[in-house]
Length: 250
Image 1 (cartoon, one colour):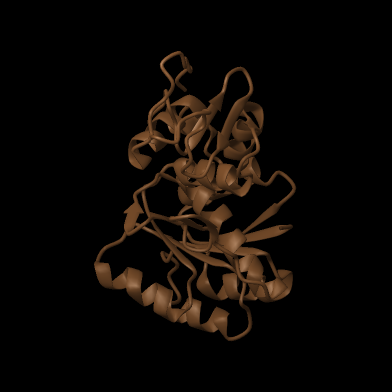
Image 2: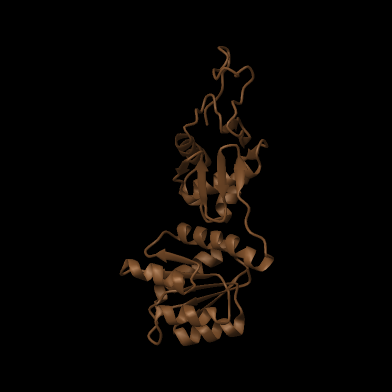
């Protein structure tokens, strides 16, 4: 991504967006337009990789700008607004927006949702759909950011989803803590908690045992690995750990 356009008259929101983009993607040039007409012209001229808009411009409605933009571009489009009614959210998405983020929101949430959108819409250019990861009864879908375990949909935070996806993608292999921290940082989620805290919360949601894990195994001093619902120790075929087995919790 090389260019991002923000369309909106609120300088405070524009600065937050600019900051979030520059922190997450330092090589991106943020461009700003304060009117709907000016924003559409800027998108035509610059052909950006991302458009964010806050519908407070005086000359056009939110629906008009989204529909007119979609007549000539399929650029990933995010609407940011202090939602006044439930209908606006639906109207924006029906008109052609890819994502609707309600303000106020944390900067980490903004960058994560934009990052997620770029991953999903990247398939529009490549022609390839994001493939879900399936390990036994576990399914991790990067296109919808949903995780299901059997018939149960798990409610995960953005950081927990990112961590789950990373570990499942590298199933069986140890993912070092430093790499996990790097991936969370790239997604704008470094400030949401430590790796250990995220693992502890994931284990609660997966109903996993830290001492005798079935899903997320701790490799002391190195990192974590996804073990796919199988007991991580030897001689556990009956579901119980050997009496002399001593394992460290996360």
